Image (cartoon, rainbow, N blue to C red; front, side):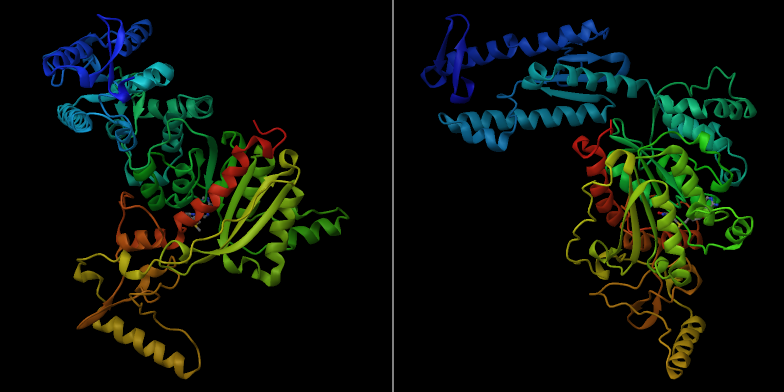
Length: 557
Ligand SMILES: C[S@@+](CC[C@H](N)C(=O)[O-])C[C@H]1O[C@@H](n2cnc3c(N)ncnc32)[C@H](O)[C@@H]1O
C-alpha cells in the first residue's frame, strides 16, 4: 500500500515497491497516478452532477487547475489524495518507512503548493474547497453539503447591504417594533420559527416602500457579515431577555445555540446588540405577548432586582382567595419571566442577578423568586460565582438554573462548574496607548481624594479604587461613566486614568471583535451592566450538557 511506499502498477496489475523502480520509471508512474488516479474525482464529479451542479474540470486557465470549478459562483474544488497531499501529516509522516527523504520532500512540497494555490485563488475572490480523498469516499454527503453551502453563500446577499435599505439608524431603535420583527424574521426565515415574525416584517417593508421593489432581494439567503452571526447548524434554541448587549447570547451562541427571540428596551444597548449580532431586540418585555415568542429550549435572563409588593397579596387575602408565589410577583419584571416560562415551558433556564438578591428585602425577594419558579414545576439550582476565575475582576453574581420537572423529574445531573484558579491580572487587559481624555482632571482627582479622606475619618470604607497591576479590579458597575472611581489606573507622573471602553469589554471577557458603536458614556453603562461572558459560557456548558443529553430526560427530543 502507498504508505509502505509501494505502488499499484495498473499496467502490470500488481503492487511494486517504489524503491525498486528507476528514476525514470518512478517519474512515469507518478505522472500516471496524477492523471489517472481520478477515482475520487469521478465519485465527486458524478455526485455533483446528479445534484444539478454544472462545473468545468481541470480548467487550466485558472490558477492551480482546480479539479472542478463552478464559475458562476466562483467556487474551486480540489480532491486531494490523502497520501500525496499529506493528510494528518504530523502523524502520517511517521508511517513512511522507506525512501523517507524522498517522500517527505515530495509531500511537503505538495502541501506548500496547495497552500499557495488556495491563498492565491482566495485573493482572486474564489471560494476554495479542498476535500480529502478518504472523505469523498466515506462522507460524500458531507462533502456535497459543503458545496451546497458554498453555493448558497455565493448566491446570498450581505446583511450589511440589506441594512442600508432598512433605515436602521439609532433614532428608529426606540420607535416601533418594525425593525425587531424584520431582523428576527430575517434570522429565522429558513426555519419554521420565521413564520411568527413574517406578517409584521412584511408590514414594515411595506411602510418602507420596499415590499414591491424588485431590486430588493431580502428573500435571498443572507450572509451575516457581523462579528457574531447565527450558527448554521444550531444544536438548540434559546431566548435572550433583558438582553443588554448580549453577554448571555454570546456565551450560548458559542455553545452552538440559536437565539430565536430577544428583548431589551434601551435604544443604545439595542444599537450595540444589532451591530454585533445582526438583530434588533424587541422592546419593553412587559408589553410583549407570549404568542410572539417562538418555542425554545432555554430561557436566559439577567433581570433587574425589584422588591415584591405585598399589596396584591393582601387584597387577595381580604377577598378570601388563596394566593401563590406567582401572584406575589405581579407588577415586577420577574413576573414577565414567570409568565413566559409558564406559557412556553422551555426545558431549562438560566437567570442572573446581583449577589445580594438572597438577602434583599430580608430574604423575602429570593423566597418569592424560588417559590414562584418551583410552583411552575422547575427544579432549581443556585450559586454565587465570581468572575475573577476568568477575568481580572472581582464580580460575584448569583446564577439560578432551573430544569422542567415534567422532563427531568427533578433528577437532572446538573452541577455548577468547577472554576479554574484565578490567574488573570489587570496588566493583561490594559491598552498600550491611551488617549489623554481618560486621565482624571485635577479637579476630579482632588475631589475623589478629599471624599475618600472625609469618609475614612468617619470610619467608612468608601473611596476610589486604585488598581494593582498584578491584581484584580473591583466590580465594574453601570455608574462607572460618572467618575470611574471604583477602578482607576495609576499613571507615572500623572493623575490616574479611567479604563477605556475596550478595557471594560476585556474586563468582562468579551472578545476583541466585539464592536462598540456607542459613545464612551453608553459603553461604560453597557459593560458595567453586563456579565463576565466566559463565566456564563462555563455555566452554559454544564446546562447544555443536560439538555443535549437524551439519557438525562424522558421526553427531551
Ligand atoms: C442587568 S442588565 C442585563 C445585561 C445583560 N445580561 C448583558 O449581558 O448585557 C438588565 C437589562 O434589562 C433592561 N431592561 C430593564 N427593564 C426592561 C424592560 N421592561 N424591558 C426590556 N428590557 C428591560 C435594561 O435596559 C438592562 O439592559
